[in-house]
Image 1 (cartoon, rainbow, N blue to C red):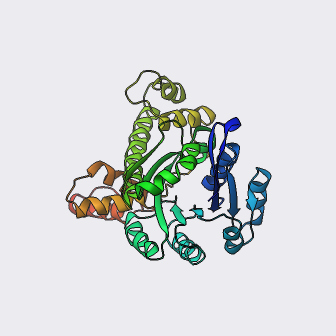
Image 2: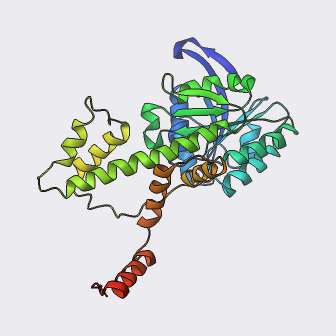
Image 3: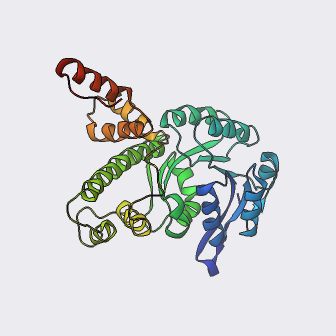
Length: 310
């Protein structure tokens, strides 16, 4: 593993293989490149690789080529969609690595997968870190909050990379294998509830008898209010650009972490009614017509003769 001190650039630099140049991955490698790390990238989309190479990264057209361009002991960061894509990528790369190399999963994997993968890789002599990564598309400019799970010596080995990707005080070794993705899972569940709270409050104000400027109110709350947050700042920006949000449909997807967190809460007998309600509201947003509400309407009509819309 190449590690060197660049006094002109202010600290230790490292070499890293990086797989996955989507919205998060591309900005991450660009941030690493700005800090003069040596980044060897791979993505199935040639145009994405070309963009990363223009930013200073080293391209490769296969996993084998990427691994061959790294110095031992190697470090490879996987940033692809969670589930099957991550599993297949980790297995394919692990077959190419050697003892004392490091595999890092920076995506949104289930922490249960980390608990299985870490010992599997350890039997091959390969180290493993799970890194819960938050920051979205703003991470290139502002940095990423990183929650790291794994063995302390390996976390320390990867510190130059973590320090570049995160803002000051923006990364933490939170525990053993799986802890990084576990903390990120809870983080995302809380995020669901915060977003739902803001959304419901702004809908109520949008129906007020007062002619409220919602963008100005959102911005106002960013100055000294106890509900100020980055999510609120983003809301203010969206409302300023489109006060009625006419360019959006009320269809809200979820990436899985909220579901996993609710299941974990059930396993631990921990009540999380607010977070559960926020998740279920997202499910409701995807229904064109709810059979639940049709059933309610049918019952009201049956027992009370209440009017129905057909």
